[in-house]
Length: 131
Image (cartoon, rainbow, N blue to C red; front, side, top):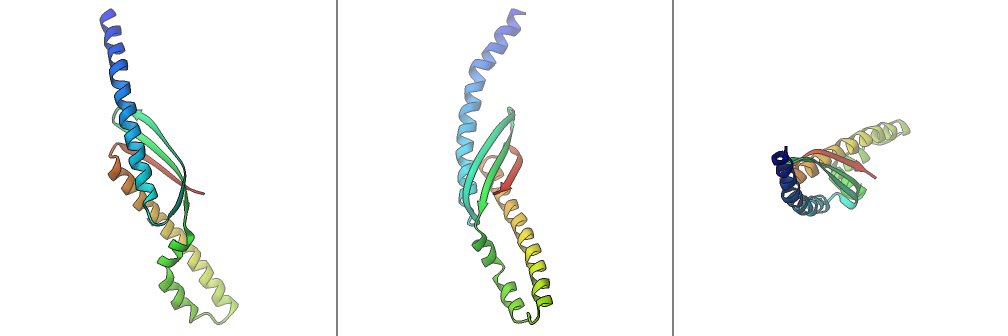
């Protein structure tokens, strides 16, 4: 029994500081991966949680730059502008444009998640929320 206790204490004393150092480094890498994305206006909050020795969860609250997203849809905007003649046309355009923005935001989140995993392959459970 003493041998097991000694073994566990040794793991705790030697392994936990290594985990903390590695997690600290990965937090900075994850933060950089999120903040360098052009559609991210501001990283509001970043949290990580160690699940086990090889896996951790990443949760981020991000403010996106709507102008960057709108710029990516500018061609659709210009095409629609010429065809809007009535309120019904405008309403149909707004409905479609809202759908396009939501889909684009999902695509941008996918790109950010891929960048997080590239920065830290141990990041498995990713949760990016918009503010």
